[in-house]
Length: 100
Image (cartoon, rainbow, N blue to C red; front, side):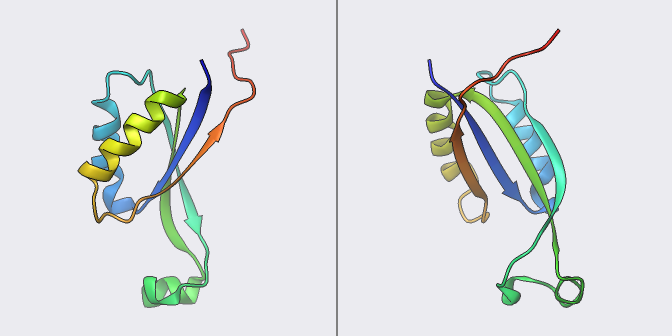
C-alpha cells in the first residue's frame, strides 16, 4: 500500500470548518495543522494590511494516509468546499514511521 501526504492550505476563516470536516473522516487516524504566512505576487488577493506586511495568514494541514484515501478525500473536498479556494498538493512518501 502506497502512502501519501496530502497538504492543504486555507485561510484562517476556514480553519475550524476544515478541522471539523477532517475529524469526521473515519478513514483518517489523525492530521496536523499549523499557522503559516503565505507570500506571493497576486496583490489583488491581499488586503491593504497584508500588502504592507508582504504576507497573508494561512493554515496548513498535513494528512498522512494511503494514496487511495487521498484520492477519495480530494473528491469529497471538491464537493464540500467548492469555491473555497483551497490549495493542495500530494506527495508520495518513501518512508514513514514512529520512533519509540
